[in-house]
Image (cartoon, rainbow, N blue to C red; front, side, top):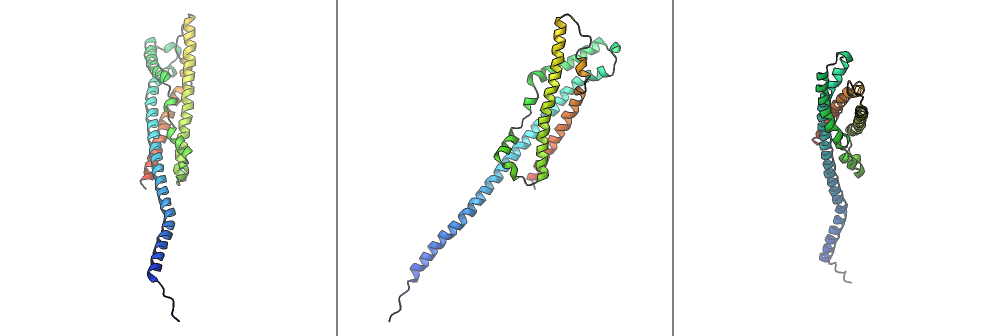
Length: 219
């Protein structure tokens, strides 16, 4: 009885074809994983760069307004260091002019809308924030943006109080009641001097957080 003839070439060909299919099926999820992982890294880098730029921009804005408020604070310091009877009219007029120049720009432009948080909001909504494994870094970013929101509240309150006294004095002047020392009530509060310190302090926090993000990218 003859043994059946085994066709090795067709079997070898079939095995090769099956192997290619099996290997392809095995590789596809892995390749997809690598592509997704690479895409996530690129997105994370993009968001990180955007947050860095936003923090640096906000820090520059706070530095700029700290400079404006320092000029206005010369008037507050003058009022604090002198009694009513020793205040000089010409000196009052000089410092009030400096303060009013700052008020004009600050009031019509309004600071708080200029401070931006768009990059961080997009980062949170995208879920990219979960990709930051360094929890200390993540905490620093959250803290920086908390300070931005807090600074918006402080600035809005600052300008609200300033405007209220300005409008009250304007009403008095219309009624023919001259104001001896303009804006004295406002400049006697803690706000004018404290605002400068807050602007500088928060600006430094934002700048250091941006530096931490840069260091994390280079690791």
